Image (cartoon, rainbow, N blue to C red; front, side, top):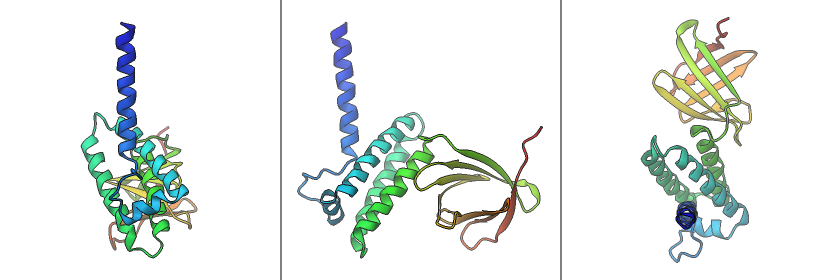
Length: 196
């Protein structure tokens, strides 16, 4: 019985290591692209690649019963996007930024970190026009906004605003300004008070 347990643990460990290393760049491969060659020759980028592989594995474990196929497809898309850094003048900066953002995205989307703050906003003096915010202490800081049936991951900017793909949220003196969608009108929002 003990032997079976030991074999099962060894197999599980081997599978986990294989899954983790499968998401890392194989620097021994002969057909490395330009960006992967750069990553393999740079200690900082190689460290970011290893960190992403670990965070990805954690996200994959959390997504096991929810949406592993979606996560895997998104990761393949991210890898293709990273390969496009060869077109950039600052290839290292491009790759590093993509690593930083992807790590923060996975940590927030799969709640690998606990939300540091949650808010419910009411916009344009309409109680039915609400947006839910969950802030995460990732690096860079992120938030996930739920607005109707849409969700946006936003990254904190230097001016302390948050920027998503086509969304922007800023706050000044308790008033939030929200732009949801490309060239959408600005909305003025305030945090709703929790019921007593």
